[in-house]
Structures are given as C-alpha cells and as structure tokens.
Image 1: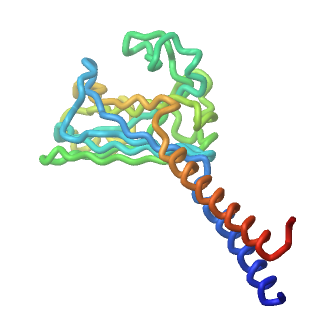
Image 2: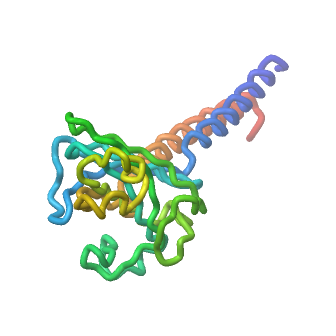
Length: 226
C-alpha cells in the first residue's frame, strides 16, 4: 500500500508540474500573418511578402518580409488602442484619405536595401514604451496589445544621400527635402485574427482532461475515493 501511495503522490506531482509548464507555454499569445500591400493602391506585393504580429500581455512583435527598391527605407508603426472608435475598418489615417488619426506614430527602424531588393524588418513594441513616438493623438504608445490595431508602414527615402544616410534611416522626413519620399508598403494588423494560441490552449485542455481522467481512475482503483 505504501508503494502504491508513493506512486500516486509521484503521479500527482507530475500532473501538477505538467500543468504549470504547459500553462506557461500557452500564455495569452496570438500570432497572425497577413500579406503586405503596396501603397496607395492596396494590391498585394506578392512573392511571399508578409507581415507577422505576435501579441502577448507585455506588447507586440512585428516583422516584415518583403522586397523593395534599392535605397534607404524606414519602418513606422501606427497604433490605435481602441480601433472600435475608428470610422472605418481597418482604421484609416487622414493622409490616406481617412478620418482616423492614430493614437501614436512610432519609429521602428531603418534599412538600406541593396540591389537584391530583399527587405527584413523586425521590432518589439512593449506596452507603455514612448521612446520612439514622433506624433499621434495620445502619444501613450501601445496600451492594448490584445485589442489594438497596429499598422506597419514602410517609407521610401529615394536615393542615398551620402552625407545624410543616417538621417534618411532614422527620421520620417530625413532627406525628403532633396528626394521624393513616399509610404510604399503597409500591413494592417487588426485584432481578433486567427490565433495559434487558441490551438495551443485546446491541446492543453485535452491533455489536462486526459490526465484528470487517469488520475481519477487511479484513485478509485486504490480506494482513495468511493
């Protein structure tokens, strides 16, 4: 009986450890991937050009995989923390013909695109981070990572200006007094997209149900419950 009790205790401990580890693995995180579109006509860039957003309780991570004309380009994030208040879906800022000014406009990086045209961008935006905000209404950064709408916008700075390249890669209007700058590609990440997390949580719940059933049978078999 003592040996059976030890096995039961070990089983319970294992079940508890499994629950803790898998629960942490399936923390509220959602991942959505969408095609990148050209601006201003909104047709798909194609060629596998996609943007992915990973949302968790601490913020969002946004990546862009695309092709661009050679030259300096910058990435900007437009954030609406309460997109239900927008006049359109997706939210559309005034420069694009809409009436939904973003809560924050945030610098998210710059790259010099070489002749291959391949462009890779990635940025992490934490809740409450206001360090790279250049404009917007509230200018509070991201406060609603799960329900906010986040647009990733790629901006061309034209040809390289040798003595001003750093400015071109870090400033919204850097070099635009010499070159013609333009927002050329974008991805609008709306809340509520397909969630890998929900699949993880479903798998987790199935595993927990199976373990609870096995534990119940074991306890009955050893006379620990009627």
